[in-house]
Amino acid sequence: QEQLVESGGGLVQAGGSLRLSCAASGFTFSRFGMGWFRQAPGKEREFVATIDWTAGTTVLADSVKGRFAISRDNTQNTVYLHMNSLQTEDTAVYLCARARASGPRRSLGAYDYWGQGTQVTVSS
Picture 1 (tube, helix red, strand yellow):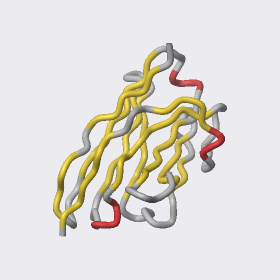
Picture 2: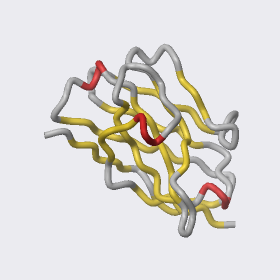
Picture 3: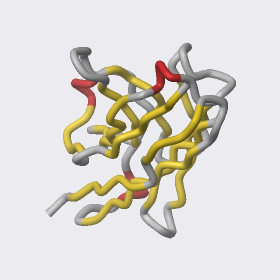
């Protein structure tokens, strides 16, 4: 069955960097757009980044533009979130998700499978 497993989270100081990975299995990864979302305690899940099936188009939330990037390796069935210049407000559980279609998508409803998430904590 479809499965998404995130890794790479951890504790980092403000200004630091992390790279999150999301390993996909159980479906033809290269046919679907993928996304990253995050959820902080007491807050709603919010869009972070999305990438289309060919990696030709990416979209980032305004709050992370210039600091984060999304990429994918269709030979490894993996999508990545590269996070630089991390800020304390980036602290959250980060989740990857599969879009229902091949293109990039911003809304939660456009995604049908979700990973369990990986915790990112940024200390000041």
